[in-house]
Amino acid sequence: MAPPPSVAAAHDRAGDAADPALRLRRAPAAEADAGGRREDAVPPPQTQQQQHEMFCYRASAPAHRRVKESPLSSDAIFQQSHAGLLNLCIVVLIAVNSRLIIENLMKYGLLIRAGFWFSARSLRDWPLLMCCLTLPIFPLAALMTEKMAQRKLIWEHVAVLLHIIITTTVLFYPVVVILKCESAVLSGFVLMFIASITWLKLVSFAHTNYDIRALSKSIEKGATHDSSIDEESIKGPTINRIVYFMLAPTLCYQTSYPRTAFIRKGWVTRQLIKCLVFTGLMGFIIEQYINPIVQNSKHPLKGNFLDAIERVLKLSVPTLYVWLCMFYCFFHLWLNILAELLRFGDREFYKDWWNAKTFEEYWRMWNMPVHKWIVRHIYFPCIRNGFSKGFAILISFLVSAVFHELCIAVPCHIFKLWAFSGIMFQIPLLLLTKYLQDKFKNTMVGNMIFWFFFSIVGQPMCVLLYYHDVMNRQALSNT
Image (tube, rainbow, N blue to C red; front, side, top):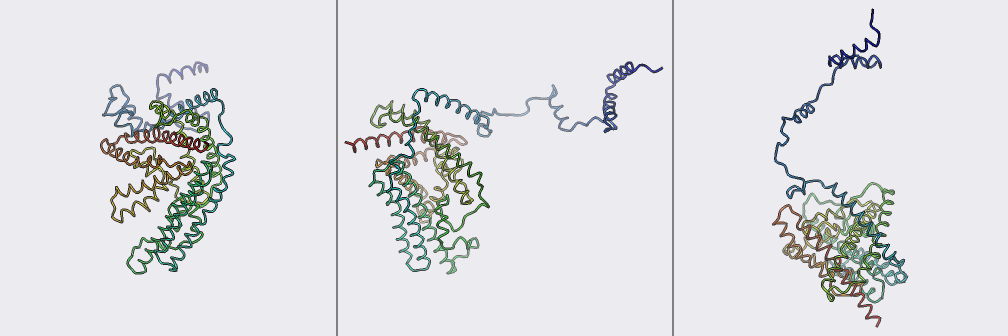
């Protein structure tokens, strides 16, 4: 007589508990009977990794096997990823600055003036506008000079003289217009910025074509037999080439550039929106934070020393934010937008300058278009003419200091050489950070010095100096 179904099932479960192997074989078989998909039951074999892990985590297995350092130790800190800490810093910055913004708005209200960026005075600066619109005449004059030199209609030294006249005029013509007209500072700065870029481009255009003619003459005479010379790179200038060069996000002229296949219109739209957002953020920080701090300050070189330190430290954070937004808007967003619209391929407009351990590294990485121009048209020409490396660096900083002074002092109608002195002061800091980097290997001492002098002290001090000098000049002109 067969046992009842309940009794039989109980015997089966008891047998399974007593015999694990039988349970492992029977369970898959039951699944196969139910679903009709499996016929046998074989336990999956353990992999070597699983067996190794089972052995390593036994109680008798050693937990400490070799010498290791903590992730935040002085020797290993710069070899670890700090993405999580960076995210934490971003979250903390957002939280802290949001509270400060709310507190500032509750205390002072909204201080934004509608005429900060586009005032009626700026719109009436028609002499500066006309000066800006006439600047394209100078590239056309440079092209005509090169065409005549290429066809040997003028002597070589005459072509050089004409280029000197053209480049000198393109720089001093806006200076005269700005100084003659009582224009807004922002309008004057934009004009001087465009004029400086035009000057740098025209110098590169003249120097490169001069070198192309010299190279072509050497090839004709058989003095040069370099197989690496590309015939495309030694062709003469054309109107299309110089127009593209004047619009392209580069300061170094060449006959052809690497090009991308197509324009990403959606990508350009997103970058334009970002550019507008960060430009508005810069305006908000300047109006809501920097202007009140500066207006309630005294001249840093004439007032109380402790008051000057307090104002400089209070200005350091908003000026740093504005400077970082300016860098992101211009070097990342605007230059990439321009490159995308022109299908310009080489978009290394900056490197990781924030990791610079010396001032020399910073100046080599933060503004690649200017760095390439200086290396190509100042540094190596000095070296080739027998000057020392130190002299070439000095000349490079001198040219940079002159243009910084022109772009700031001319629109402000003040020639106190603050910007010039600030750039030239980088030379001893360059030597100091290089010495510290050579002495303390694999450290970020130079990087800390760079951030301290450049952002915490340098920029706020320049803002205070120029603001008070501009205010004093306006007070004297009104009396």
